[in-house]
Image 1 (tube, rainbow, N blue to C red):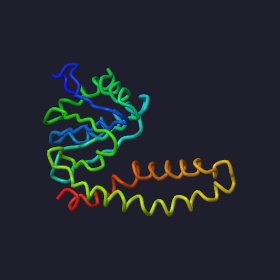
Image 2 (cartoon, rainbow, N blue to C red; image 1 turned 90 degrees about the vertical axis):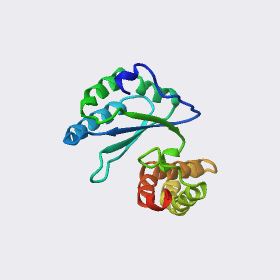
Image 3 (cartoon, rainbow, N blue to C red; image 1 turned 90 degrees about the horizontal axis):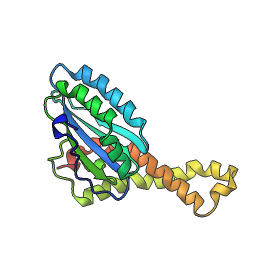
Image 4 (tube, rainbow, N blue to C red; image 1 turned 45 degrees about the vertical axis):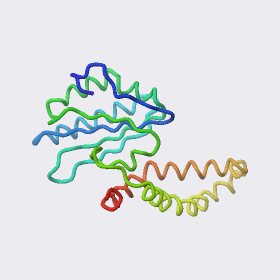
Length: 194
């Protein structure tokens, strides 16, 4: 948050986990300083309750805008991080290296997967979101159960109806959210955001 904004925070409409999307435009010659600061603030955010990870989109050559998605499991945990003294002090430290004020946006669910680095760009059509999501999840529904099968054989209680499905679903969702979807979206961004 920018110091000039005081205690103002973005309007937040929540019902589950949250992604805090932050954009910073870095002044020329300050990228190394910013990268060092970025490591510090990522480590600080990780100490807060409900923290689920960070995804950084670095600007391509010739550009200066970083986009950081910080995920929290609940609305109030995201809000606690946004309003914390730790974050306020860290942001205050980096302000001299920023070309513009920081932009903060709150998103719920999986919206951040489909948000390009500039929030002014329109969202992709729903059918493209559906197609990409299906293309990612479909092979995982074939692979993950097969990979987990030896565990189910060793621990029959985990193979019980319902428990097995929950473990498979949790593994698939973790792979999609943390590993696969961010990379796939970057790969097909030219088509997806057209």
